[in-house]
View 1 (cartoon, rainbow, N blue to C red):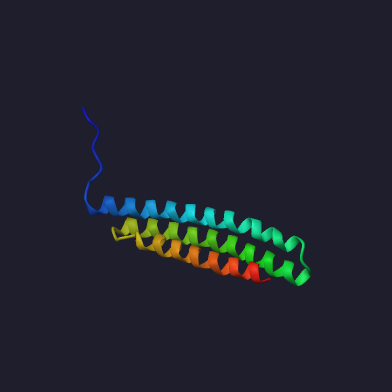
View 2 (cartoon, rainbow, N blue to C red):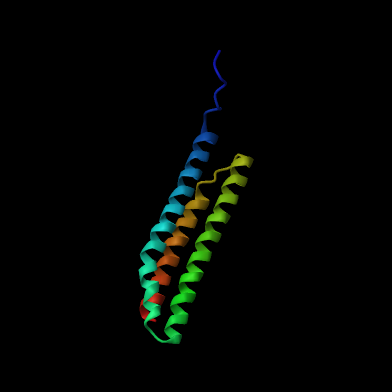
Amino acid sequence: MSLPSAPAGPYLTDRAKGVTLLMVQAFVSCIVVGMTLPLAFKGVGCGTPCANVVSTAFVVQLWAFAGAFVVSLIAVIALSMKGRESWCVPAVGTVFVLALGIITTIAILTA
């Protein structure tokens, strides 16, 4: 007696792509935060306006990455349950994470 297998086909592979890209988005977010964290310590030695820019940029980056991940997660689940393609949502989330990471790094370095 064998267990029933999951239905194969485009639905299963699309769901796997969505989940895989969601993990890639989380990994890229961690890498970008890890690269920006040493720059955030730059604000400790500079004056108040500089420290405000650095701390605000880093906090915005953290909240935006967490928000982008939650939105991507909910969208992947919702689209997968409807049987639609869901891989594009975490792909856009990853591009957003990279773009915001670049903008935040520039803001911290020019402060």
